[in-house]
Image 1 (tube, rainbow, N blue to C red):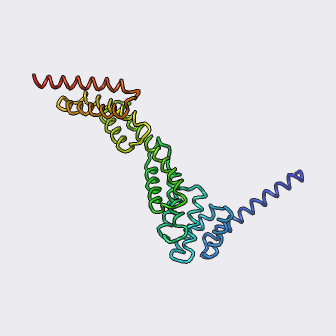
Image 2: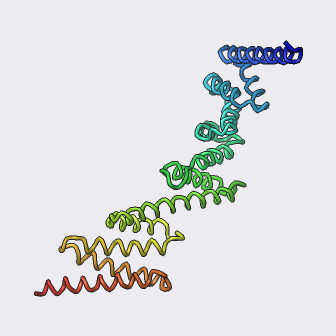
Length: 274
């Protein structure tokens, strides 16, 4: 064997042996009852950016030190290690837990913010279920209410705007989806809820128009005894739309719907009188 190749093989074998020894040493420490040594090692691993090992030790230490001197430090660095490993779900839970257990800690405010921020980081694309986004908004709002003078308030407001925009887009697409598949009753109610929930939504004009059209199509497809009431609602919705968006690109189409609804109402009244 070439001397250089032999040297490389020896170095590789030594590295493997060193790694195995290190792993065995860590496992031995993890399974030991020397909690002081575990605590010191956990802090050392954390400071050396070895967060995975630090997490295992902090998790192991949590129960033992509950109510004891180092409990606050363990709770804080355990959450921080999870956060730095980008395990936002677990980190958010631990930060919230820390804030509840140590409400008078110097880190309580930061823990509440980071709990909310971890929820924000877990918020998915608008096309997916937005339960986590709604939870994150609640967390951010709770933080802002509790710490209105916090240095984090400007970024909290930015995150809230971003997440609310995500909900607006999601709810609009749900409503439009009903309209697209011609489920006009569901579309009408969805657009109605959308307009009530988001008075400043950028697509408010489109939502009001599609609500108007969905209402008309739902009305003319209804039973005769329900048509009069529903067509009258179409006229009311047209008045709201035309007064809100007098220069809308949809105004001509909206006026056509109004004319048809008015004619249908006239027919109903004529039949009633006969």
